[in-house]
Length: 423
Image (cartoon, rainbow, N blue to C red; front, side, top):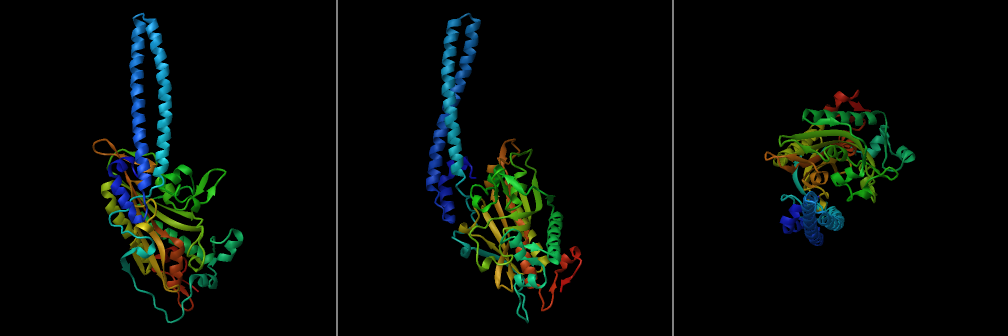
């Protein structure tokens, strides 16, 4: 959520910056500024009345001590009138605060200066490529055929138990999942991330804290009776650990990681691009999250990108990195880098990670602050990234490591497996 002070001071720049998203914030910003002016005026009136009440309270005490009971009673009558006015102003101030808050929730983050204007994924910039395309001397099979051939994943059984998008991993398929999770967590630990096992459902305040609500409400599974949401990513519970927290000083760099299942409704997804593991309603992911001093955000983002690079290089997969354009950048992010691996069998790129910086957008919602050297509180910066999401990694491994009669396993996973290949 954008800070109200930033809107007061830089509304023209914000409106211009949001044009990169093809988002016209003019009307919303003007309405916020109008309501903010009313809020400040009524807040000032309320404070003036409070000061007057304090003054009269002292006068009443003096009048009683001087034996001027009638004058004291008259002053008490005036106090009652002022308290009524104060209560009315307080209700108006709180109402305006809520109206401003609701308007702020509708405005996305302003893209970083490096983000180019654009409407969709066609306008994203490729900033890095690594690895070579796997060449086959036979016709490679897509992963949904391989999982059936080697009895690794049963998509039909998942439909029977739950519905489409909820696969059942079996035997070596389940073991590959567990090996990847352990590998990703071990690499995160080596990089200094502290591991957490957070809840897999969150309350509404947590959804608002990281920006999933109200923007992505329709994409989340909602347990209406308890008003809880199944998490779409571990980012939500991990970042909310620091909701309503003031860090005691400016010497901090918080690095968290966690493995969780993730749940996404993915409403409207259909067709060949969602076949097999390409798009699921439930999937596993290891997430990395950072809370940083604003001066350290650039460095932290680079470190996170390098961390994901290292994972993909150890897995031996061809990959590329894209910096998303304004129109494809998520609502809460100031800048996002997507990682894609190449599927030789499907002859397409598959997104496996997004690494994003949010600057103060999430921390303003979370009230996540730190005390600077001057003892004044400031908003911290937040970042997060997938390290990594499993479904498309599994798809790419099966497709790129297949031979005519087996599927080899990458060397980095062998310590976590009881087998070197699937036959």
